Image 1 (cartoon, rainbow, N blue to C red):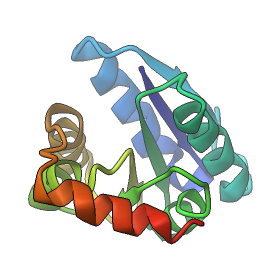
Image 2: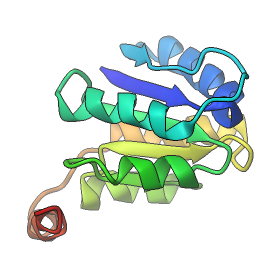
Image 3: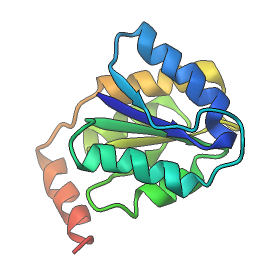
Amino acid sequence: MIAIGSDHGGFELKEILVKYLEEEGYEYIDCGTFDENSVDYPDIADVVCREVTEGSSELGILVCGTGIGMNMCANKHKGIRAAQCGDTFSAKMTRQHNDANVLTLGGRVVGPELAKEIVREFLTNKFQGGRHQTRVEKMMSFEN
């Protein structure tokens, strides 16, 4: 299960990504927003991150205008390792090495086709563990 959400600045790209998830056979929950009316991105980030931290969704995708605000909000949630990605290599590596569980994208800075490729890399790559496990554990210890 994938939790996906956006503010008004990321709404158009979120809708494209929802269609992409459907086409690829992913189960997802659309956490809003549902139109281009102005909303506060922290509210949407909170819903998606709770889906992930409570175990209802394995991964999350957040989209705002730049991806920055959503990323900052997501990383305030205990247990979230959000990564803002603008290229496929970063999406692949953040899953493999950082065990990222939320992807943030900028709807005004990443085109739809690239965004789909980034999402594909994020969803199809798995955490490698090993030496990366110790690093992730150290990172997560900062929450305490």
